[in-house]
Image 1 (cartoon, rainbow, N blue to C red):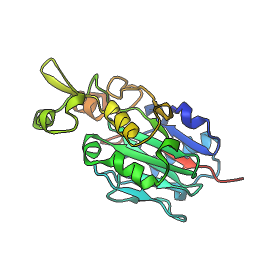
Image 2: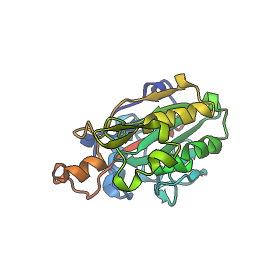
Image 3: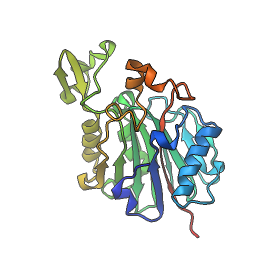
Length: 249
């Protein structure tokens, strides 16, 4: 399990990113997925965590953000790629295998968020919708960017090469060896900065899922080398990123 240093500073926030050795997170919530998340939470000291504490996003590569009300837990919010809460005890879980998992904390208003930001969601405006949904002063937000595929490995497939000319991604694309590589990391950082998040409050873990398949799941690596996942019990394994506010003792 890995952590973001800027979030670790806050004792009332619990967060983590599961590595392959910590167990996979299925695209749909199931007992094994929930068990892996709960094991991680208990390892971090949240001894009373139960399934009813967990909230999953359906993740449809869109821009919908759901603000979780008190008393809600143990389920999947459909048609959603982002979750926000200010209720202690609710643990927000994002699954990924190349897209950007983003964890956010607002120490002034006591809110946390977990966002799934793939190329489609980013171009549809999920970063902008996240800032809006937090309804916070952007300069107070603490942001952690978890492992994802990076500009060293993420290239556009043939059917998406039109984005090199027609998209806001254009300036973040570099052609190498006949392929168009995209720096989604910098797209997200620039969008956050544009909307008022301080650069010093944004921490990027720096890990590429494609480069470090031994530690994290990668959808692109699975396409190229399906044999590396032959021993996995799940057909489309992902790793989990989670964040929540600890209940008061």
